[in-house]
Length: 221
Image (tube, rainbow, N blue to C red; front, side, top):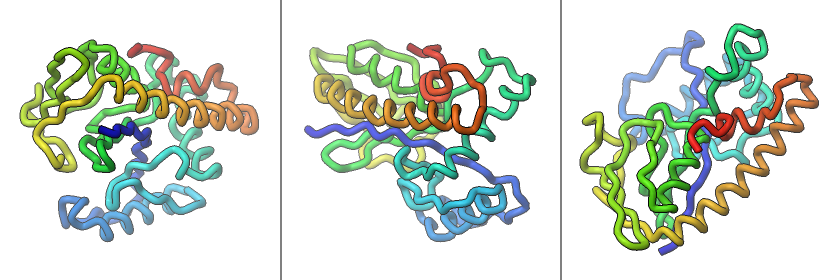
Protein backbone atom coordinates (compact mmCIF):
# COMPACT_ATOMS: atom_id res chain seq x y z
CA UNK A 1 0.00 0.00 0.00
CA UNK A 2 1.43 3.33 -1.13
CA UNK A 3 -0.16 6.31 0.62
CA UNK A 4 0.15 9.98 -0.26
CA UNK A 5 -1.33 12.96 1.55
CA UNK A 6 -1.44 15.95 -0.78
CA UNK A 7 -1.91 19.46 0.65
CA UNK A 8 -4.37 21.56 -1.35
CA UNK A 9 -5.87 25.01 -0.86
CA UNK A 10 -9.50 25.67 -1.69
CA UNK A 11 -9.77 29.02 -3.44
CA UNK A 12 -13.30 30.34 -3.78
CA UNK A 13 -14.10 33.73 -5.33
CA UNK A 14 -17.71 33.41 -6.40
CA UNK A 15 -19.19 36.87 -5.83
CA UNK A 16 -18.01 38.98 -8.73
CA UNK A 17 -21.10 39.27 -10.89
CA UNK A 18 -20.31 36.08 -12.78
CA UNK A 19 -23.33 33.91 -13.51
CA UNK A 20 -23.09 30.61 -11.69
CA UNK A 21 -23.44 27.52 -13.90
CA UNK A 22 -26.69 25.63 -13.51
CA UNK A 23 -25.19 22.27 -14.47
CA UNK A 24 -24.28 20.20 -11.42
CA UNK A 25 -22.29 18.48 -10.04
CA UNK A 26 -19.02 20.18 -10.91
CA UNK A 27 -17.08 16.92 -11.34
CA UNK A 28 -19.45 15.87 -14.14
CA UNK A 29 -19.35 19.31 -15.80
CA UNK A 30 -15.73 20.16 -15.16
CA UNK A 31 -15.03 22.25 -18.28
CA UNK A 32 -17.98 24.52 -17.52
CA UNK A 33 -16.96 24.96 -13.89
CA UNK A 34 -13.30 25.49 -14.76
CA UNK A 35 -14.34 28.34 -17.06
CA UNK A 36 -16.56 29.79 -14.34
CA UNK A 37 -13.79 29.71 -11.74
CA UNK A 38 -11.33 31.25 -14.20
CA UNK A 39 -13.74 34.12 -14.88
CA UNK A 40 -14.25 34.68 -11.15
CA UNK A 41 -10.51 34.72 -10.47
CA UNK A 42 -9.88 37.19 -13.28
CA UNK A 43 -12.68 39.46 -12.02
CA UNK A 44 -11.24 39.28 -8.51
CA UNK A 45 -7.88 40.51 -9.77
CA UNK A 46 -5.72 37.40 -9.96
CA UNK A 47 -2.99 37.81 -12.58
CA UNK A 48 -2.18 34.20 -13.44
CA UNK A 49 -4.25 31.20 -14.41
CA UNK A 50 -5.03 28.46 -11.92
CA UNK A 51 -4.83 24.74 -12.65
CA UNK A 52 -7.10 22.77 -10.29
CA UNK A 53 -6.04 19.47 -8.78
CA UNK A 54 -9.41 17.97 -9.71
CA UNK A 55 -11.03 19.35 -12.89
CA UNK A 56 -14.02 21.53 -12.05
CA UNK A 57 -13.02 21.91 -8.41
CA UNK A 58 -11.43 24.83 -6.58
CA UNK A 59 -8.66 22.71 -5.02
CA UNK A 60 -5.08 23.72 -5.88
CA UNK A 61 -1.81 22.12 -4.92
CA UNK A 62 0.58 24.44 -3.13
CA UNK A 63 3.28 24.28 -5.79
CA UNK A 64 0.72 25.12 -8.51
CA UNK A 65 -0.07 28.54 -7.01
CA UNK A 66 2.10 31.18 -8.64
CA UNK A 67 3.94 33.84 -6.65
CA UNK A 68 1.63 36.62 -7.85
CA UNK A 69 -1.50 34.65 -7.09
CA UNK A 70 -0.19 33.70 -3.66
CA UNK A 71 0.43 37.36 -2.83
CA UNK A 72 -3.17 38.29 -3.62
CA UNK A 73 -4.57 35.22 -1.90
CA UNK A 74 -2.59 35.96 1.25
CA UNK A 75 -3.49 39.64 1.28
CA UNK A 76 -7.18 38.87 0.83
CA UNK A 77 -7.17 36.15 3.48
CA UNK A 78 -5.48 38.39 6.04
CA UNK A 79 -7.14 41.71 5.14
CA UNK A 80 -9.24 42.00 8.31
CA UNK A 81 -6.37 40.85 10.50
CA UNK A 82 -4.03 43.46 9.04
CA UNK A 83 -6.71 46.15 9.29
CA UNK A 84 -7.12 45.44 12.99
CA UNK A 85 -10.79 44.51 12.67
CA UNK A 86 -10.15 40.80 13.28
CA UNK A 87 -8.19 39.41 16.22
CA UNK A 88 -5.51 36.86 15.42
CA UNK A 89 -7.24 34.37 17.71
CA UNK A 90 -10.23 34.44 15.36
CA UNK A 91 -8.18 34.15 12.18
CA UNK A 92 -7.92 30.80 10.45
CA UNK A 93 -5.55 28.87 8.26
CA UNK A 94 -6.02 28.67 4.50
CA UNK A 95 -9.08 26.65 3.54
CA UNK A 96 -8.62 23.28 1.91
CA UNK A 97 -6.87 20.33 3.46
CA UNK A 98 -5.49 17.04 2.20
CA UNK A 99 -6.25 14.64 -0.61
CA UNK A 100 -5.71 11.05 0.50
CA UNK A 101 -4.29 8.89 -2.29
CA UNK A 102 -3.85 5.14 -1.99
CA UNK A 103 -1.99 3.30 -4.73
CA UNK A 104 -2.40 6.33 -7.04
CA UNK A 105 -6.16 6.60 -6.50
CA UNK A 106 -7.83 9.55 -4.76
CA UNK A 107 -9.96 8.09 -1.96
CA UNK A 108 -10.75 11.21 0.11
CA UNK A 109 -10.93 14.94 -0.58
CA UNK A 110 -11.10 17.88 1.83
CA UNK A 111 -14.69 18.49 2.87
CA UNK A 112 -16.59 21.67 3.75
CA UNK A 113 -14.71 23.91 6.21
CA UNK A 114 -11.49 21.91 5.91
CA UNK A 115 -8.18 23.75 6.39
CA UNK A 116 -4.46 23.21 5.93
CA UNK A 117 -4.25 22.92 9.72
CA UNK A 118 -6.05 19.58 9.38
CA UNK A 119 -2.61 18.00 9.12
CA UNK A 120 -3.04 17.63 12.90
CA UNK A 121 -6.03 15.34 12.24
CA UNK A 122 -3.97 13.02 10.06
CA UNK A 123 -1.10 13.06 12.54
CA UNK A 124 -3.54 11.95 15.19
CA UNK A 125 -4.78 9.05 13.04
CA UNK A 126 -1.21 7.96 12.38
CA UNK A 127 -0.63 7.93 16.15
CA UNK A 128 -3.76 5.87 16.76
CA UNK A 129 -5.77 8.76 18.18
CA UNK A 130 -9.33 9.58 17.11
CA UNK A 131 -8.66 13.21 16.27
CA UNK A 132 -11.37 15.75 15.46
CA UNK A 133 -11.74 16.62 11.78
CA UNK A 134 -12.59 20.31 11.45
CA UNK A 135 -14.42 19.80 8.15
CA UNK A 136 -17.72 18.06 7.57
CA UNK A 137 -18.78 15.43 6.87
CA UNK A 138 -16.07 13.38 8.56
CA UNK A 139 -15.39 9.65 8.26
CA UNK A 140 -16.19 7.31 11.13
CA UNK A 141 -12.96 5.91 12.57
CA UNK A 142 -11.97 2.58 14.04
CA UNK A 143 -8.51 1.41 15.10
CA UNK A 144 -6.95 -2.04 15.22
CA UNK A 145 -3.28 -2.80 15.87
CA UNK A 146 -1.32 -0.79 13.28
CA UNK A 147 -4.28 0.18 11.12
CA UNK A 148 -7.04 2.76 11.06
CA UNK A 149 -10.26 2.31 9.13
CA UNK A 150 -12.10 5.27 7.64
CA UNK A 151 -15.80 4.59 7.04
CA UNK A 152 -17.42 6.90 4.50
CA UNK A 153 -20.84 5.25 4.54
CA UNK A 154 -22.01 7.20 7.58
CA UNK A 155 -21.18 10.63 8.92
CA UNK A 156 -21.94 12.55 12.08
CA UNK A 157 -23.85 15.23 10.17
CA UNK A 158 -25.68 12.83 7.80
CA UNK A 159 -24.07 14.53 4.81
CA UNK A 160 -22.71 12.97 1.66
CA UNK A 161 -19.01 13.19 0.84
CA UNK A 162 -18.18 15.33 -2.18
CA UNK A 163 -17.02 14.50 -4.69
CA UNK A 164 -18.28 10.91 -4.37
CA UNK A 165 -15.58 8.57 -3.09
CA UNK A 166 -14.54 5.39 -4.91
CA UNK A 167 -15.03 3.15 -1.87
CA UNK A 168 -17.27 3.07 1.19
CA UNK A 169 -14.41 2.45 3.58
CA UNK A 170 -10.65 2.11 3.53
CA UNK A 171 -8.20 0.53 5.95
CA UNK A 172 -4.87 2.31 6.21
CA UNK A 173 -1.58 1.04 7.54
CA UNK A 174 -0.58 3.64 10.12
CA UNK A 175 3.20 3.38 9.51
CA UNK A 176 2.53 4.06 5.82
CA UNK A 177 0.38 7.04 6.80
CA UNK A 178 3.23 8.35 8.95
CA UNK A 179 5.50 8.32 5.89
CA UNK A 180 2.86 10.18 3.89
CA UNK A 181 2.57 12.79 6.64
CA UNK A 182 6.33 13.24 6.65
CA UNK A 183 6.26 14.00 2.93
CA UNK A 184 3.28 16.33 3.34
CA UNK A 185 5.12 18.24 6.05
CA UNK A 186 8.06 18.72 3.70
CA UNK A 187 5.66 20.38 1.25
CA UNK A 188 4.23 22.50 4.04
CA UNK A 189 7.71 23.65 5.06
CA UNK A 190 8.46 24.76 1.50
CA UNK A 191 5.15 26.61 1.44
CA UNK A 192 5.92 28.14 4.84
CA UNK A 193 9.16 29.55 3.44
CA UNK A 194 7.24 31.14 0.57
CA UNK A 195 4.84 32.75 3.03
CA UNK A 196 7.66 34.11 5.19
CA UNK A 197 9.40 35.60 2.17
CA UNK A 198 6.11 37.06 0.91
CA UNK A 199 5.36 38.55 4.31
CA UNK A 200 8.69 40.37 4.30
CA UNK A 201 8.67 41.42 0.65
CA UNK A 202 5.12 42.80 0.81
CA UNK A 203 5.62 44.31 4.29
CA UNK A 204 2.50 42.60 5.63
CA UNK A 205 3.81 42.67 9.17
CA UNK A 206 2.18 39.41 10.29
CA UNK A 207 4.27 37.65 12.96
CA UNK A 208 4.78 33.95 12.24
CA UNK A 209 2.55 34.17 9.18
CA UNK A 210 3.29 30.56 8.24
CA UNK A 211 2.23 29.25 11.64
CA UNK A 212 -1.08 31.08 11.28
CA UNK A 213 -1.97 30.29 7.67
CA UNK A 214 -0.80 26.68 7.67
CA UNK A 215 -1.06 25.41 11.24
CA UNK A 216 -3.52 27.98 12.67
CA UNK A 217 -1.06 28.68 15.49
CA UNK A 218 -1.27 25.06 16.62
CA UNK A 219 -4.90 25.28 17.73
CA UNK A 220 -5.65 21.76 16.55
CA UNK A 221 -2.41 20.07 17.56
